[in-house]
Image (cartoon, rainbow, N blue to C red; front, top):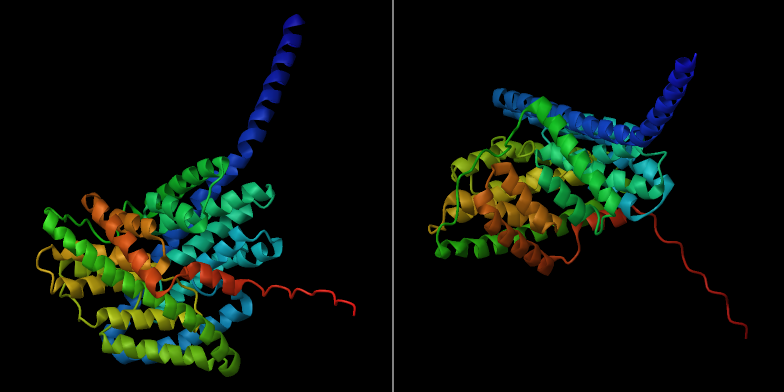
Length: 441
């Protein structure tokens, strides 16, 4: 019977060690599952956005005037649903994540990152794309990723939960663009100024898992195509200066006008109600008809076309696309500005390429895309890395960095604030008035 006692003791020791192992790795398995879920949701979101855009183009090709019916009615309905049921789903989603990360308020976290918001927001954004809105899916994917991470980490400590939300937002960028490095850089540069040691390890792993999950569904995509271009001679680096200044100036003006527009839209909506998004929808439809449909959607198709041929669209495209993006955002529909900003930057770069004959047109367009994106978001490192990863343009990394840094600095001459941080402050409740006791006489 001695061997029976030894077997029982060994089994108890094994069960004790297995229990300790499970308690140690159970949280990590939840985090990894959440990262995979972020990647899968981002991939499904991408499929839905592409389906919506392709159907809209088919409908407007058959009857261009149909957008005069789709855009006003659809955008008005989306805004009504958003304001009534998920008011914190309006807009990009990045300001909501910033508000949660920078302010330790449980009530705000539950309002901004509720799981039903993360599930309903991509549906509303896809419907907005189907109606002709000029919005991107990348900002919403950041809020979706943060919402999923917040749900999984709701029982953890506040410090660890914040790290998970940060990692979830970064994983959203990585999965949306298929740019893991850009997701990490975006988390460090825009979402948080400093990372705790434990959170940084979690961030890297969750970003990688989310990107792999998205690749498993969508394939290893290069969203803007493989662009083989470079600035071979030192004289061609003059394009960095020109594109950085022009792109940064345009991005800074756009971000300042967008912030002012969102504040004005709140006033108009409070006084005119749903007539405001109805008006925005009519103007979006008119811009789409004038531009022959090039202002609809996120702008990926136009950016790819311009990189292949800088005369693919009208020289007025950046102005028309910028107006459509501005109207779409201030209307109140859920949607971001990442990919529309890249498209506007591509349009400005194509216009510059008509006059710059000392550098390849594709290089000029890429430089202006990075500079405009950096000027609009005040995230120059993220801008350079995103453009480089979306085109596999490793040869252009240094020129892109220079143009993005120059664009970000130029934009600060127009508006010293950061768009997402300014929008975040608009989401916060006004500070309580400070009362001082009266001095006795």
